Length: 387
Image 1 (cartoon, rainbow, N blue to C red):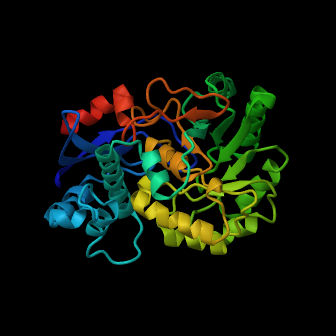
Image 2 (tube, rainbow, N blue to C red):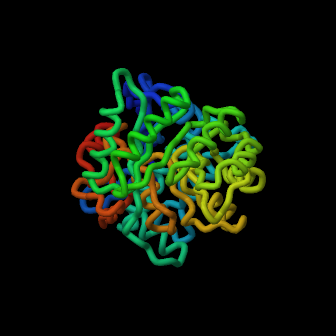
Image 3 (cartoon, helix red, strand yellow):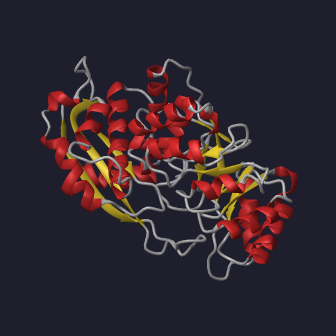
């Protein structure tokens, strides 16, 4: 049993939308295939992965640095003790061989993308959905029912309040009961009108979260907090730079409602520092670490240990990214739910075909691996790379 190839292709996920910091007109993702010599039901097992939106494709790092380390390793050293499956932690160790501590930037995305594909292959070899495999390994009961919220509300040319309200109404019509919109890309007064318009549209049918994408300095963050605290928001997300823990801690004095951050922290060390110094409150706030951007599921499990060690419940974790990898982690490890992009970043976002949102939750299908084979537009794209 061995890994034969690791293939990468950089694919566009471009869109005319923008948030408070960036536009997505040139956004890309890395699609990765981990090809094994294992055959299941007449088909060679191939694990697939891709990186979340908001960070670009990592083809250079994947091809020139990380994939080579795995392929150069003795195949026996990448297997579990029983030699009946690949060991993701041993593959991860090979990926990170000769890497210095720190520097959790683009390399964490490259490693996380390969790691996603490795876990997909491992669960397929085991013949199990990844969420059930994870639950078994952690000696817990898997919960196939997962909370999801609809992320949208981006800025784009010509989008007025009517279009924003119609977008949010469409999410309610599809079964969501929490929706999210962007702020910080307009003036405070303009954003106030946008927030009020959406709240008026969704009424008591749903809750609204807002996301500033790290745009604000402390004074601006406080001004927004004073404005937003008058509304019953689900959360106020990423007010300032993700590494400005002092800003995050200071904001709690002005915003008593739930806050959320963490999607741009890429290691368990950074997560631990946020909980030590960021003033986050385990009774109400939310953590958004994204495995695909932060060295993958192997590292995410270390992050969860840091979270629980700091007195937090995994149920306060709702990952960024809107992908099926995090859906499996949520169902298998008891997270609080997952982000969802109903209309954006296709075909990589969304759920397997036939999965519907009901009362803000989806039910995980019993598909081996991460479940990409259940989403026909996505698996077609993936199989062009490796099958």
